[in-house]
Length: 460
Ligand code: UDX
Image (cartoon, rainbow, N blue to C red; front, side, top):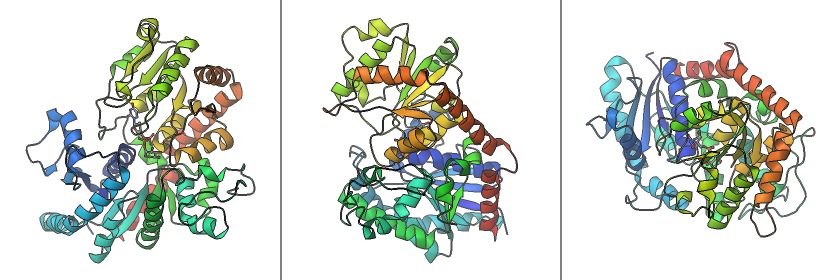
């Protein structure tokens, strides 16, 4: 048996690409070879940012050392098409990419066969389950890399039970009753409207049910970027679930698959700020604020009169107007960047709290930094993550919307002050930090053992 060779195929959004690349780095560190398949659109975007390292070969690049090879397929959309339209992207990928995959695998195997370096395992994130069908027709093993919490995965895996128990309807997956649900007898009650699919609509709900079915059939392991202690209940529900957060978090401080250039000047700026003084505000790669909400947030930060670091993504919230006089007023208090080196920011001693959309990657990175959260979820799994942050781990507080649907400047000010005044929350965040660090550093940590056993399994 040669060196394990993984074909990693993430769904082409930032929240899937980053953990997939972290996972690939962790595999490479363990001596494995990886072929990382992106869409051409994203591949080009990332290449543009890494122009210095770009290779002349468009199809196959060795940007990340000889262990990780980047390859790309078209996603079937035109360059100017809107890729934020999830359904459009999903269906276009399904119509375009599967027919190309067997040829890629045959080419790699023909090229690498002499070195006994055949593709041994296909790893996909959710929505790319079609690749398992290709893999199993060629006798290749499969594993799912779930980009969200293990709990969200077990919730999705229980959709049929929720329907049978009359918690949600079968067409849209929306709550039928207002009655709360409980994931286990010792867990707090959860609102069924926080279930991860509730914000996504009928077509996606149908697709999700199908994807879970495919993953159940074809993915031997469901790998999660988490730590056992954060979600023990989820791990009691299926032996397929493997927490591998330790090795993934250790892999790299950079996100080499970022769509935007990291503005590292903010690290220098943070160095000038006192310990635990800065409010970090970031809503990940996907969520958008409308002008009204953007204004309230800006005014909330202004009212607080504390240092802040705010990520305003290029081409999105960047188009909004700041309130009159805001820039002058914040010039020596605040820093606004288009895209931050978030992992490093969250580990910086100057950060006091994190106003977050509660995307799973941000959640894990915040826990790793030991930073208290102010939760501002927008969609899918973010409501479950908020529930865990506030109710289960007690590592933060939620921001409440006013009847008009807006989180007001006063609410922002009040909650930041409440959070920073709460020593219990701060102490718990440090405890979670320690637990996450242990999973990364202790050689016999469960995450590290799981990861190594997973690699061993691919050699069997
Ligand atoms: C999406 C979903 O929204 C999320 O709920 C799901 O769990 C994964 O896919 P996204 O909204 O982008 O992801 O949020 P998140 O999961 O937090 O991922 C964002 C990534 O971008 C993180 O790895 C974060 O470190 C990175 N990031 C964010 C930066 O590097 N710089 C920034 O300025 C902001």
